[in-house]
Image (cartoon, rainbow, N blue to C red):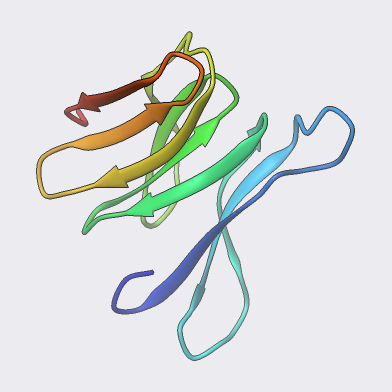
Length: 106
């Protein structure tokens, strides 16, 4: 969450989970806003001052806080899981590869 909204991912419809979404709603409640759709296996989310970041299948994605076209930050991963963000970088783990990776969002 940030100062104005709560953000989450909806994994999508089983069994393939190809239609995941990234959503937000105001802290005080209200109508949810869809930020990104069609996110296969969407899970794990992080937010900074301008973007929302999440894991989608074998990729790390981002979209502006207001929504738009998702951007791929990393792809071809084995099993990405945890994600975190600071002022300059996005960090994610891959539990099968046993790695923590740092990328600079573009």
